[in-house]
Amino acid sequence: MKKNVQNIRKIRDFPVFDFDAYSPEEVARRVDQVGVKKIRFPAVVTLMLGILGGCFISIGVLSHTVTLANPYLNDGIKLLIGPVFYAMGYILAFITGAEVFTTNNLAMMSLASKKVTRWDLIRNWSLVLIANIIGVFVIVVMFILTGLVNMYDGALAEEVIQISSLRLSFTPIQTFFQGVFGNFLICSGAWIALAGRSVTDKVLGLILPLSAVPAIGFQHVTGNLFPMLLTLLKYPDIGVIADITPLNIIINLILVASGNIIGGGILIVLVFYFVYVRTKW
Image 1 (spheres, rainbow, N blue to C red):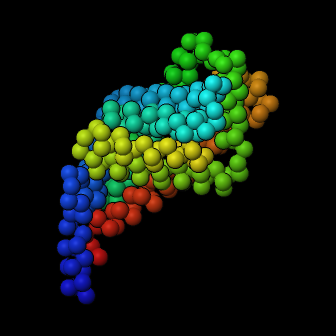
Image 2 (tube, rainbow, N blue to C red; image 1 turned 90 degrees about the horizontal axis):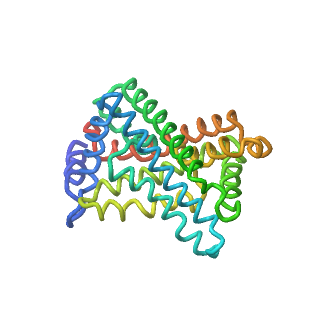
Image 3 (cartoon, rainbow, N blue to C red; image 1 turned 180 degrees about the vertical axis):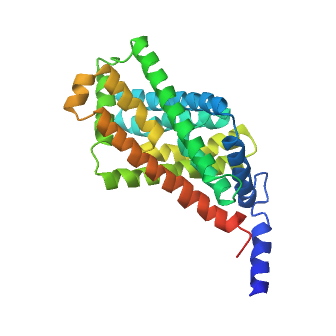
């Protein structure tokens, strides 16, 4: 038995890749280290980076929505390039080091390795989520002030309302599992990006997993905020008719956030922790 354990450890410690990329074992250690660093940021730094993260995600969601509403593009092109614009927001946040609630679920690795406490983790997630909401709100208000909300003869407004209504139309169970899948893909992309050594590596690693989130219809808490807040602030009367109310939005965000934690923090992080970080077998 001891011999088998030693052999497993030898295999686990042997780098899988022989090209210029971090091995899965090295990525697991990097996730652990990054999680500790992020959680130990002063609150003001976390809030500032979280606001910036909310802004970047909103820009990506806005670009995706504008693409879908563009009447000069055929449906095939919209379905192809729209998700790429959606991924742009996360790519900007990841490369610049901004804080986003969903990718911060990777900090579960630091909790599993007992380098941070549960309170530290809850504090970080709470601050980042609040900051993300503020960042989304800032972009929504600024976009309204640009006067471009009714572009394409109102087609953009219709798309925003339709997206918001669709996100809120699912049952609690469906919403929860869409959140699970959403962050499973997002954290998978972040894991791949951490294996890269250059900006190009990271961007290429992020594009496909992140694009799959809107392409399939999965949900993540920060991305849901932009169309819903825009509907509430710009079209409150239509929002009430379509059941896009503050209460429904809060319920949606709680369900999606819970699913995001399971998808990223459990299905990705804890599995890799057990395989690559845990020392006791």
